[in-house]
Amino acid sequence: MKYAVLTTLCLLPAALFGCGSDVSGGATEGATEGSGAAGGTGGAGGVGGTGGTGGTGGAGGEEAPRCGPSDPPCVVASAPAANAADAPVDAEVAVTFSCAMAPDSVSAASFEVSGRSSGARTGELRAEGAEIAFTPTRPFFAGEHVDVALYPDLQSEAGVPLARPYLYQFVTATAESSGAPTASPQEFGTQLATVFGDFDGDGDLDLVMGANEEDDRKLYLWKNDGQGSFTRSEPGFNETDQALSLAAGDLDGDGDLDLFAGNDVIVGDGSKVWFNDGAGVFTDSGQSLINIDTYHTYDVVLGDVDGDGDLDALAATAGDFDGEFETVFWINDGNGTFSEPQPYGGWMTRQVAFADLDGDGDLDVLHTKSRTYTGDEIQWSHISFNDGTGSFPQGGEVGPGDVGLSLLGDLDGDGDLDAMFFPYFGSDFEVWRNDGAGNFTNSGVALPNATGDCAALGDMDGDGDLDAVVSFGGWNEKTKLLLNDGQGVFTKSPVQIPAGGKFVNLGDVDGDGDLDIFVANPEVPPSGVMAPRLWLNE
Image (cartoon, rainbow, N blue to C red; front, side, top):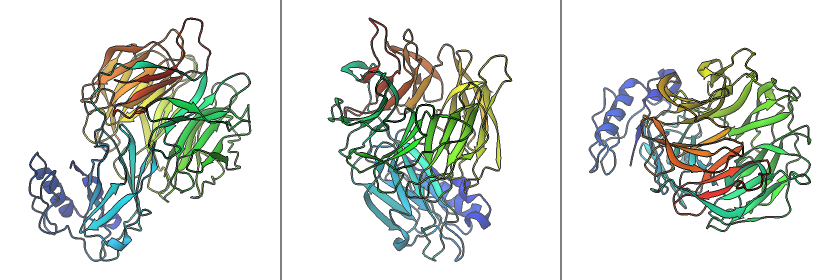
């Protein structure tokens, strides 16, 4: 079992997390010494602390870590490791705390595990001493992002709750593959926004996609037969609007994947929330989410930004002419009803992302920014650091100027989230490394002629690190595979997909353990050019 030692939390002031460096020191040593094929013995604790947990096959210290009677527990280790890119699909999720935990405080509400493609996970929860572990009922999908959320209902044996929520993520492993996808014979027509997810709860990845026909711009659920062949479910929905972006997540707390549709207000009434009944039938929540200053929702992401146990929405929106781009929050009440929009500056923001960039257990925001015309003032991307309550008192510029597209992931295998920045003007992308505290520096790694309109991260060749799939929307363009050497250095694969797209999604649609690629394009291809479609990895 691979552990990540989360010393950052325990080195914060005791008034906040109730853990001094002595306790974290013991846990750190134990986790380090316990690694290895045969497993080791938990290390000796520091003054006031006890031995840490051993690694794979190893034994922990003889005593559980201790807190004082009034100290809140804090997280000292997790398995799989936070931000890992190669967690087993059948992984047990285990968290070690700084003191023994009260078993009766452990529940699905206080220790949440959810897959971004599979929704809230059911399984067995157990607490023993300082460790809480969750065994899912069925495996995660290959290459799936998994979120773990710990909430203050969790208490120590002394009855002291966590000082504040703690959230982290990891990515599951994929099978070794050639990274040479072949075209599926199935065609899907012209498409706008697309998203993978197990929307009908049958254990495979379905696809929700926005049609872009002259007389049909509805959203449709395409159900997977488990082998990568899809059937369109009728009727469509979102019929009075046109979705420019889609995000899937459990918005109403019933365990299945709902949809947040970032719509074009010029075409319809505003962004919409669609509730899933668990079988893939979607019902309009009745909300029309509009930011009065802008009209189009070009990008939307979901995450628990305020730590209250539900998924909020963050969007990059734009006005009816180039130049008015703004970041907007919508806060969820837990039942899928969202607040009035809360603009958060971010002018010229083209893309947004939620992620814990400074390792403190909450979701920060990356605003990807660029000017529209070369004669305008250069725009710099920006990080906003969350204080754990959904407020962002600190932040700063990051990356090169005028970025049109960015990706976040642990690119160099050191346990924190790094960034890939793709320029809005020009063609060379850059890798910026994170020091774990949210300070990014240019790694010097750049790759010419590798930018695009859309991109996604995933382990395409099954070697345990995150590669990138990048696509341009033009019909004379290709979809490129950029292979990572595990240190954040990328090379272009000789394999290219002979079709460009405006949307790229990765997922194991045929159940063989590797990541397949869906390339979508809203335009009708010219004669003789292959339409965007599903590409199956082998």
